[in-house]
Amino acid sequence: MFDPYKIREDFPILKRKINNHPLIYFDNAATSQKPKQVIEAVKEFYEKHNANVHRAVHTLSMEATELYEEAHEEIAKFIGAESMEEIVFVRGTTEAINLVAYSWGLHNLKRGDEVLTSLMEHHSNIVPWEILSKIKGFKVKYADVNPDGTLSQESLEENLTSKVKLVCITHVSNVTGVVNDVKTIAKLAHENGALVFVDGAQSVPHMPVDVHELNCDFLAFSGHKMLGPTGIGILYGRRELLEKMEPFHGGGEMIREVSFNPEKQRCTISWNDLPWKFEAGTPNICGAVGLMAAVKYLRALGMENVKAHECALTDHAMKRLEECPKITVYGPKDVRSKCGIIPFNVEGFNSHDVALLLDSYGIMIRSGFHCAQPLHQKFKIPSSARASFYIYNTREEIDRFIEALKEIEQAL
Ligand SMILES: Cc1ncc(COP(=O)(O)O)c(C=O)c1O
Image (tube, helix red, strand yellow):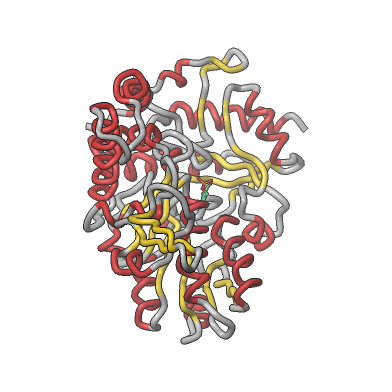
């Protein structure tokens, strides 16, 4: 039984009062709160097992290595990857995208090629491609977005020419919560000879995601948005692609051998096995251990249940927002095509002022353009307020949010 009230007991921060009100945390698209199971796993690691991984033969290093590798295996299971060789630990979605840009794009894209992304992307799925295109001379193209914030399938198909070598698309928009049909997009892209990179930052924490079902070549997501610690994220890559790719960062851990040739005065280097080839230097071991606890927690809840709970909350919030005449909600009205994220503006107020006023009621939301300026340009607004839900949010919290918004509406 999925019980948000019971779940809340696992989150110490939710006991806090802010501005004399019980904390309502609706900024989950930015980062999630952490349950005591994750906090305990991190604490236990430092108290009992802390050592560097893959380097020493002593007991602590063996224990740390075992936990670190087990974390890769847990993540592989969570997203249906074939093995832990396909799971690379990085700092987050941003680093995963940059890894693909530099390890794959730098060596495989050239003048005349195209990378197809969309106008609903987070900047982290735009900027690395624009930077690389300046170096390599390929073109970045943008599939358009419909007025309701959904992806224009027509524009995507029009832009998907034989020049496109990579389609980089978000699974779920971090502004509107729109869910893209990445399975169909992957099919079209593959038929066209392009690879598919899916930004799963807003999908993996909130719904079942299986890389085989999606048939994507790469998937990126961030641990901190799914109950895990900050500074740990994942790049999934199909094994044969990762095997052929050059490393991203060079250093310790990612090499098999570095041998100095005195005649040539050079070092010959061979790469380590997957996934270590892409994990240079001492990794975020404790972050991986915390993320493993987070994934176990989510798996016990059931990702279908997580999705259903957030859909029900969104449905309730969308209906109640209709009671607020000065509020404009962006994105699709039909909750079946979206996740638990609602962007809005209150007539006469700047989004930051709305967020500050809500803070005085103990309600935390995000304001600004949420690292997605092209989408805000499309909506012809400079910024928006954004409420985003997770497993510990309740209908009562949404009701308090609506009552606070009604008072704010009347303030002008
Ligand atoms: C859709 C999307 N992609 C990428 C990112 C970047 O994630 P991170 O900052 O964890 O690297 C975010 C973060 O908000 C996001 O929502």
